[in-house]
Image 1 (cartoon, rainbow, N blue to C red):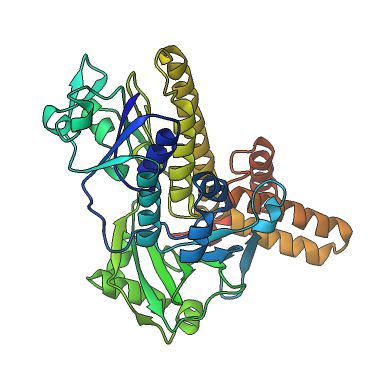
Image 2 (cartoon, rainbow, N blue to C red; image 1 turned 180 degrees about the vertical axis):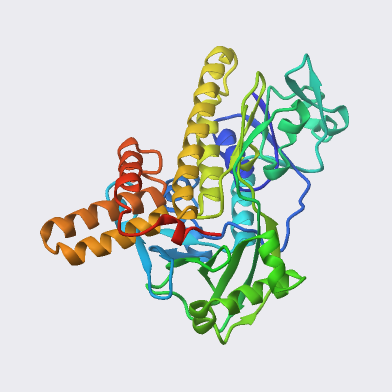
Length: 420
């Protein structure tokens, strides 16, 4: 079976590597364009089994920093600690923070080692019979080993470019956020504790992150409404530094920082495509949908969806009927899981998570004892499990969060903790 993958990021390289290992003839078409810094440096435990399947966990550990969990701050002294120990027995109890250029290069080398042919070109495509996607002749000519034969299947891993969706006129459901993200790498900043812990911070304007990286470095980023960003200056550098200095805790703990890289800027977006598969094509990773950088679902969904898609595509001839069924199941799973991540992220943006935390602290003070402790641990386990990726779409965990969000915020007003 001949398969063309469009886009050489982690989603494209992962699906290409796994399909090549199954025996397909895989060509990955990529223009090689990468910014110096790429968002998505903080990973979650759900990715570790994918690394093991690719045979690269030791290398990921070598280039990255072991991550035990996430601390979410929502005030000068208020914070929620989410430990990945909550998923013991379900997933590994850790993840990694990685410099993306080195990480992406690792996934590309893994694809090459699996037998994937990489073509450095901006692919061109045509539509046939209304819904079939074909490689244009000039792109097909870049693959002489196929002797002019068309690929049997095409995969769009082009990320935000969403090449197939735009080609076919496929719409998407959009989320409400329209933010801008600025970030850079700094030195002379203490790492959060415990070592490797990622910090997600509610700020006066928007929210931010601190991600420990080798060096030692600290990736500091802010996600802020475009109009609010203008309060802090006209350039990305002024806006990033201004937001950092505006937060008392962040300015104090990173007061001796020195920036090591240019400031990278990305437009945040929330999008889920209304169609992700077709008769001879499928989309994977951000090309299908992206929720938000909050809690780091982006790279997780990119590589997990790549693994799922590789499993849904039979590489033997004569399996077209079963492929169609499997692809529909893949699309359903992808949309459902992205929606679950979106719901979880919304609890942070609208302040319900923080109001629930404040109510829990108040209840523990008024009614101390075993029940309060058990309830606190149970909620923390489910919330941590959702942030790990293990429980994010788990029906019980979603029900628990919805129930608490409706009935367990009487000690605080969620609007007071909403992220602007």
